Amino acid sequence: MLWFLIPAVVGVVAAVVAGSGDDEQKKLELEARDAQRKKDAETKAFLMEQARQAEKNKRQLQLELDATEQFRELLRTHAAIIDRRGAPVERISFERLKSFADKSTPAHSDAMVKYLENMLPDVVLSDEWQSRESEIEDIKNRIKFINEIKCKLLSREL
Amino acid sequence: MTLDDCLDQLRREYPEFSRLYRDLEDQKKIGSALRIAVCGLMNAGKSSLLNALTRNLENEFFATKAVRATTVVQTLTHQGITYVDTPGIDVSSEDDEQAFRGLANADTILFVHNLKMGVLEKAEVDFLNELKSRRPDIEKCMLVVLTYAESATEQLRERVDSIAAILAPLFMTPRVMIPTSFTRYSKGIREGKSALINASGINDLHAHLGKFVVRDAVASVSPRQLREMRMRAEITTILDAAIREVKCKLMALEAEKQRDSKSLVDGVVRLVSVLRERISRCESV
Figure 1 (cartoon, rainbow over the protein chains, first blue to last red):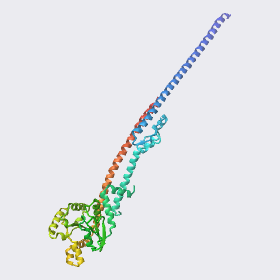
Figure 2 (cartoon, each protein chain N blue to C red):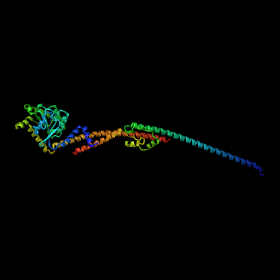
Figure 3 (cartoon, rainbow over the protein chains, first blue to last red):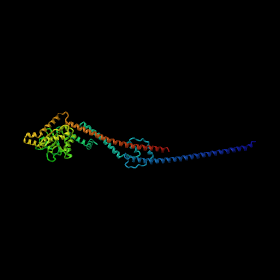
Figure 4 (cartoon, chains in turn blue, green):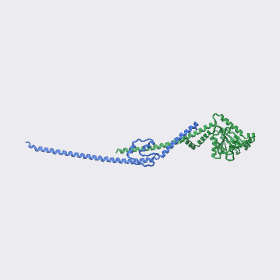
């Protein structure tokens, strides 16, 4: 007696089955789109990172070249103070520059030479500087001896 | 540098120090005997005078010649007194310096002038001026001995007055001037004639020198000590000037060092500052 319902049920079931297949499809599509978006984002991020790294490397390289030239210039402009006996200034790496810049800068020439040794190995105070140092030492000794002679004269030891 | 190096340097750079230091060293070596030194032009009769004072008439301890006989300082100690003969002045600067060295530590200086030459020559006056600057005490210890008095018997008074007039501007008090004649003295000794000996002036000179001996003996601080004190004070003044000069040089060198040091420190600080800035920019990319 309910035979008349059979087509309707079948219709409904078929409709339900058909409806369920569409959702799955949509879901799959969505997932695929998400994956693609993610992949695109990752690719974009990768490319951006690559570009950033390239830019950073470029800047570091330029900094190394510029800083090396500045150290050469420092040696030239302060030839009366520091000297490397003509040794060339090789390119200084970014890491060494960073390590150098991280240290505190000394306030006196002697300590400054030691500080500069980090960047300019074998750097020393120039001959001119050392000759003046030895002249200063001689003068101090001379003053000491003249005073000694004076004391001896006054105490009649001489 | 050692103390000796410093002394050598001072001697080279300060001739006055060199001279005073040498005179001071000489003074330590001369012993305690009274020291009488003669000075004057070549052939003024210095050596003959000393031979007469030391009774060395025959053997001439101090050589006398018409040519330049005395080229170095010669000394002879006779009866407790050391007599010093010096090279004649105005022959060469070396001889003059030797003469000044011989006079530097004399307790009594006999400035000898030959009356045959008339009044004082310019060279003699210049020498006396220099001697006065080196020995400010000559006011008290210098006698003028006029030799060859026999050559100017007639004009003696007049010559002595003229010489006194020339010397007057150089000294605060008139100089004692004693005319002497070695010829009379040696003849008097040879022939035993006391009148000739007395007329030679040598005994007068002995008497004056005796006064100097007594004066120095009773002085609480001997002229020699005073002279030494003066030399030490003069050397000290020179040393003070040397110290001032050397300190100025030291200050200039230290200022230069300071300037260079600051230039290096400033240069590096600037470089590091730029470096830090650029490292920071690199790392912020």
